[in-house]
Image (cartoon, rainbow, N blue to C red; front, side):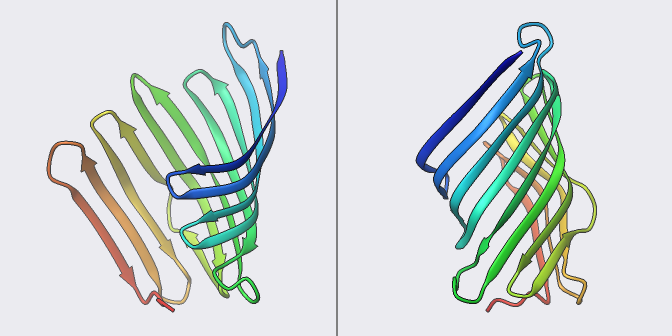
Length: 170
């Protein structure tokens, strides 16, 4: 068994900013058939104009090729005096022969009094030549919906469809 803790301050990666990171890991049989958990907590996270006071993640490793994840975030939105934002997401991940697939099984996102949920599981697939979104669809149960599907290859034409119906912009 390998156990440990990790920490970091003032983190920034691809538009995501976090003031602090702390976490723990517990890996069993690390050399032959690794499995276990990695848990992390990010404080003061900013992404896409939203501010989360904290984001907690748990990555479960079933073996070297697959596992599951969960993400929980809570904080303030763009207007920190009145806006609250929360995020709950769960899914599976796999890595095999240079291809990473992340399946989103459930998603609940709340902001400005609006609640958005995932219509059906959706998969993001990434390899060295492209990334593909398999029908990511959200609805707010009041007629609003957002959808993304398609493929973005490195060297060919993009085939990506984005739809938004009855989505408030303000």
